[in-house]
Figure 1 (cartoon, rainbow, N blue to C red):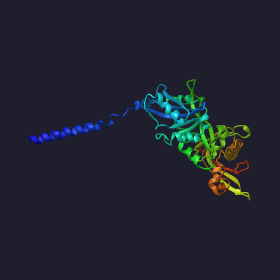
Figure 2: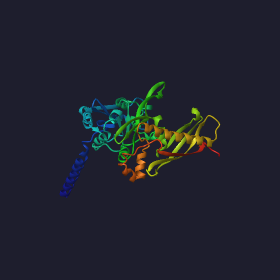
Figure 3: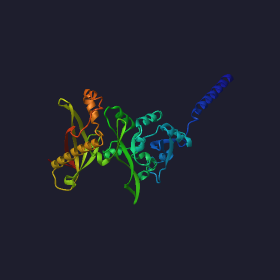
Length: 388
């Protein structure tokens, strides 16, 4: 009996020691406040050197914000490194690092215009050699100071992660003008023959939001940077590319101002256009002729004069057609294929593409777009259905 009790005591002690050893398996884990989580990465090129900026957030404060807004400004920590190569510039950030740096939470990568004029493909290849950086961060170009861009305070004292920089999709759903792009989508453009990369441009504005009467900085998407065959083709402002939104299949909602004779008569809201581009080879020389078809419906938001819905539809069709043609011609003046028409030629007539040295000798000209067929259908005027 005593032997049995002794064996039971030894078993209990052994089990206790085993559990104690297992529980010590997390002794080297760090708390969230003891790690530097990088949320955004910025790349510049100054004086023949790469300059890299990192935007880090204080996650202890971000966590406290859950379910409530902060009463004071949420601080942002910005790291800086430089070097003759991009990799050496990134590693330079570690030089004065006070905490272990984690890269896997990056949700935005911003390239300054000066960096875009270098080898963008090589830079992204270098970044992806860091196994923690994934294909899902949003990518932008900018002409702003990266330090000032990353330090811009968010409206309503929200965390910086609740901004266009890190979450552009929600705002794009309300006003679809320039489509946000992920790192994965950027690579798809590179791999698709004849495609032109249109990188969204992000900047800071002080003209739209005020805290009481004090101007507040806010992010805005103000245009695009065009890249074709790894060559930089400049910056295009939002007003210069108004026709692009009608050829983008992921447009959700966009507004159109009807202004015949340069005087506004109505404001309409248009939704999810259905667009397609058809390429025909015409004549003995097989000259490409392109037809763009756009079908779109929407509603009347505001009218400033008496006008029938049918008349508004005709005016809207005319303006959309004009915007598409103007954007195409403006691109040609700078030798940029803004609508990626070469890619459409490749997809629909690959033999023609191959005969012209894989697209190298295909030249766009103003008469290449043979027709822009636009159909607009206005279904309602806000809460009121339209009667025909």
